[in-house]
Each structure stands twice: as structure tokens, then as C-alpha cells.
Image 1 (tube, rainbow, N blue to C red):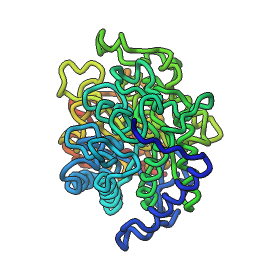
Image 2: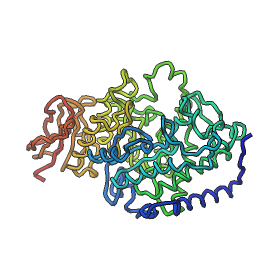
Image 3: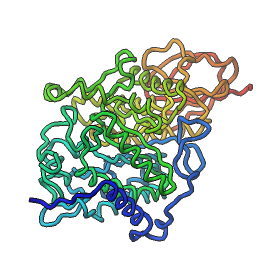
Image 4: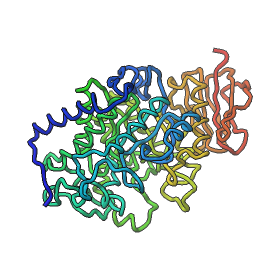
Length: 508
């Protein structure tokens, strides 16, 4: 039988905090990394003049990104990849703490062919810190997902190779941990008990103590950096109790060290409106019979963005990535719906999209959608008033391919040319508009921007007067020569491609 360590709750919490403090203030850091507490005002925080956006180093920022993988700290050529992202205007990456892919480094060391959950793997955490440090140098914000959901479910490289699996570690048995040694189902089917350790009805301290140790170690690295946002899970299907516990836990640990952090949750349910937008889909309609046999709609009922929207204490921003599986006009309507609900609430917050699905690499890619839809999602999110947009990894997204680079570069060119953080979604200014034809942002009567996913012709009902008009060709990131037009009037794209335009009133 494996050796098991039993520890009283109070003693364990004390040990956890001492462990965290020791790692945070000592732990073999360079002189730069010894500067543990950054200036809070220069760290990532909600922009006080417009709480739908972020501020970093005392300036408002729009987060745009796309990278080759989700567990970015595990890749080769990390610095070059992040420099490429920065060169095209990107400043936002996703980091799942995943180790299920081939050649990934695990977070724990082995002893006699079994993992020891009390022995952190220095290589794993060194890679994680390298990501945060390089990203900080390049002014890139890292959105960390603490629990990489699919590492704990089916597949030969998932739960079957996860150090928390009781058959793979020295620290507990199946009987002691109440964890299965085999998980041959996806999270959409039923819950791995690993995600039920914090249950108010039946907590599992045997496993929870090791989960806390993992999170403490993560925080001992991440809390030294000013450029980190936190998400509890990737595509949560286990309901609200689990992420609420961890949000409280990590915020409390941060506060003890004088840090303020921002936390969200990512839910698996596609529709963030819970059926309030006609045409929005709840789950994947195109993965075939194999998926349908595993889908448990009782789980989807609890895996909804409304959990985040309605709990501003636990979640300081709202992550809506799975909404990006919606298409066309429905996608825009669901995106605007979330913003409007937050606008009407007493606590508006940033809305993030750390994953945008879609590429032409998988045929037919029914669930993720084609490249054109991914490109349009990227723009519709921003024109719906969201704080971030990032392409998911290939082949399920555009990553940082040339297609993604053009989109990021053009979005940055447009938003840098306008008083972006004073604009609001303003499709009400467009008439003679077909579904998914054009989208508008406007700043009172002074300035507005319009995005066209393809060829389009609409009437812009702006305040009467003369405006400077500049067209931006998105695929080349090139501006056409400025012209002067009178509005209200007709706007028509120069050709069949994607276009954006910027209008500034001349006779104010």
C-alpha cells in the first residue's frame, strides 16, 4: 500500500502559507525576480474610466492575440513566438497549466516510477516563469488557466498519464482518494471526482491538500508578475461550487501578499444568454453520434456564463470564449447581449475571449467553423465592446498564422487611430443593413468605425456634417488615401474583401 500523509486542516493551511511565503520571497530568484511586489497601479487592472476594458502601466489597453498552443510555456522557441506576436500588435496570450501533450514536462517529480505530489518539478515551473518574464518584457498579458480540464479526462495521454491519478503517485490510493484510476469519458458526460473535492456536502481533504499545494506553487511564481489574469478552468462542466472555491482561495492568498488579482471562469455551454437570443446554440451540433452519446444536458444546465455575470465578488471579469462557436449575426447578438446585461448591472466588467475557433485546416470543420468566420468573430467581439480577442491554436483556430497576423495588425492599426476606449457599440446608426453585413462603434457625434466582414453597402445615420473617411484593407493592413464625405450617407466597400473604415467629424 502507498504511504499516505494525514494532516489536520488548520496545520495544513499554516504549512501551505509558509510554503507559499518561502517560495515567494526566497526560492532561487534572480535580482529582478526578487522584486516581488510590483506597483499595484502599474499592474493589470480594470480601467477606471471605462470598466469594460483593462489598464496596464497606467494606460488603457485592448488585448489582442493568437498563438500556436494553449500551454504556451511548454513550447520550443517561446521568445521568438512572443516577439512575433508583439511585432504585429499582439499583447495577449493564453496559458493553460497543461502537461498532456507529447514531450510536455510534468509538474511533479517521480520516485521509483511513481510521482510524488510533494515534489514539484523545477523544470515545469522554470518554464512557466520564463513565459511570464518574457511576456512582461514585451508588455504581453498572460491569462492563466489553473486547471486544464482535459488533462483530467479521457484519452491515453490525459488522465491515464496525469500525476494526480491514484495509480500513478505515491501519495494516495484509489480507496483513500476516492478518485478513479480510469476515466474513459469526456467532461461533457460526467464529472471526474477530482473536481468535487471542495463539495460542501462531501469534501475530500486527502486530494484537496495536494490541489492546494499545486495552486500555492503556481501563485509563488505568478504573483511576482504584474501581467497576469486568472481563469480557474478550461470549459467548466462541474458547476459553480468548484470555481467559486478556487477564486476565493487564490484571491485570499494574493491579498495576504498585498496583491490584487482578477479572476474569471470559462464555461463549456456555448450560449451565454441561456436561450434569450434566437438562434444561439447551446452545445456542439456537428460532432456526430459519438459526441451525442456522451452529452449530459444536466451538466450543461450548470455550465453557463450567467454564473460569472451574477457573481461579481468571485469573478472580476467575464470570459465568454465558447460563445465564439456561434456564427454570423447570432454571434454578434450574443456578444452584445452579455455587454448589455453588464451595462445594466451595478458592476460592469471586462469581457474576454481567450479562444476564437475556426480554420480551414479541418474539413469539414462543422463545429469550429471556417477561417472567414473566425476572422469575423475576432472583429465582432471588439465591435460588441469586449476587452479582448484571441485566436485559438491550430487546427481548431488560426493561432498566429499569417491569416491571424493580418487580423491582429489591422485591428491594432484601426484602434490606435481612434479614441477607442470612448466608443460604444452603435449598430443602431446603420440602416439598410443585412444580417452580418456591417458593425459599428461610435463616440458621440465625433468619430465612428465600421467593420465589413465582406462586401457591403449600408447607410450610416451619423450627425449631419463633413467627415474624414479612411478605409483600411484588413488583409494587407493598408490604409487607402483619406477622403472627405458628407453624412448621413451611403458607405460601400471598395471591393469584395474584408474592410474597416474610420470616420472623424471635421466641422465640429
